[in-house]
Image (cartoon, rainbow, N blue to C red; front, side):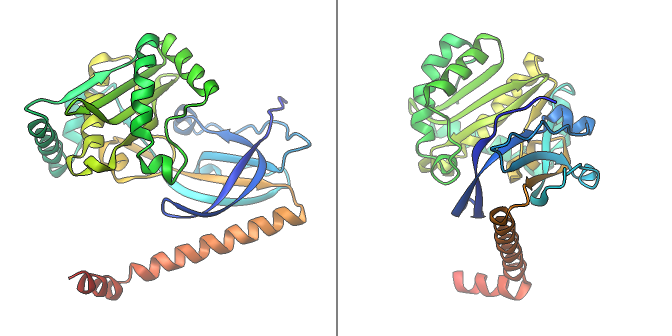
Length: 304
């Protein structure tokens, strides 16, 4: 069996987008691609290196959880979500027809509002080739620095040399699609997608919150998908791990998935799992209480 190096990965104590604390562990990450999710392919875990604490299996189709070979390790489900995707092979007309009426009208309204504010037209520019990516990256980095994805989640567009070289190499192999949306000549939203087989992944995304009222991120997403439908290069658009209202809105399908943490049975790892389980249970209970109708009505009265 192939041995893959472990990396120090943070296990987050997180409420929404805000991380309160982290514990790091040496983990071998085993991510499921969208192709593997849709095929429900059984995971084959690589040999665990001696210096590793365990595995982090992401996007495991939930029906496969019961049959997962935990190798005698501590198993803990950290997250449940739907892995959303859009079928690009069906065409733009079919995609639009599958959206709700309110979603279709919202798409038109947002695009029109942004175009009017920008002098009558949308200004969206594509940077798919390697030479164009060199122009795209510093402009998109300026936008990324303003976003919650970078400030709260640590998932902004990377600027380290190794990551930039990797993205440039993808662009040189026709494996990258990148766009910027400009407002008044200044970039305010970016989308940088990477290829994974026949799927294009929603890898790096963000918009300047100073322009949120114009919905630049949503407008850019729709226009990018329209280009992908017309291009016909990719079969699916993969919204990747985690949920979000925009993912649900723009997808054509989704698969129930889980992220599973598998740790060696050491005292420190047992304490880590106990702490994570207690924290996650507390957050879940607090969300249920906050969603109670009586508290919802009270919150509305307070806001008035």
